[in-house]
Length: 251
Image (cartoon, rainbow, N blue to C red; front, side, top):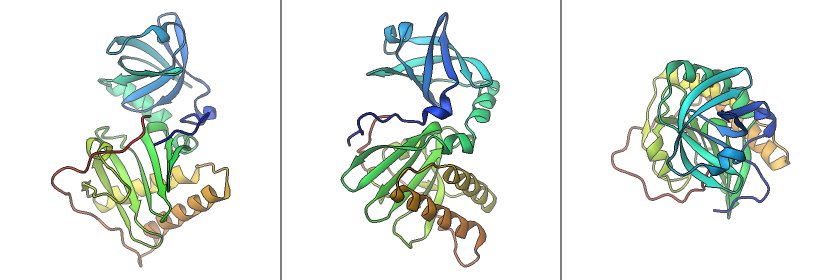
């Protein structure tokens, strides 16, 4: 999979007032979720070593908190910091910052390979679209960071599949049409999560006509499922076993 040159993972407007400090050293936050942060590798952050555990002070707009993070990767101008454990107060700060509106404003296409386009954004949100009009959209479950909420439409007029999937199983997914080990949700959870998806898609800011058409299609599918009795959500049962090996891009 190829990354589009010169494109960032998130919309800078969404995180322009977000910083992380290590002692006296400070750098900008490029991406953040309940499991990790990606920051600019400047000053002391450029000297961090893989596996190093550091105590960091985060400033996400008005939210300020301290946590332990582990250096899990480095690249050209960035450092990835994984969170091993979040106390309730820190999780509350992240929940306040990672609202559907904030997530939605940050979805942006980051790579294209053949007939597949991939969008990435805050809070591990991802949107996959292929040339057969199949769509898979997912984001990290705020209440359970080991799982992702996921919706999928296999074809232009096909039914909507919705549920939760273990993040480990999702990371092993090899294709939009691959088998999903979905955990079904009850009706209340389903409609609440679909409402969150509608908010995220509503705040997606497309820049080209094809993306605008995609946004309108997704809003139509979600709205029909939420409000129409003539269309039912396909609740897939859990599948045993594992999925095929992944072909994924690094975030």
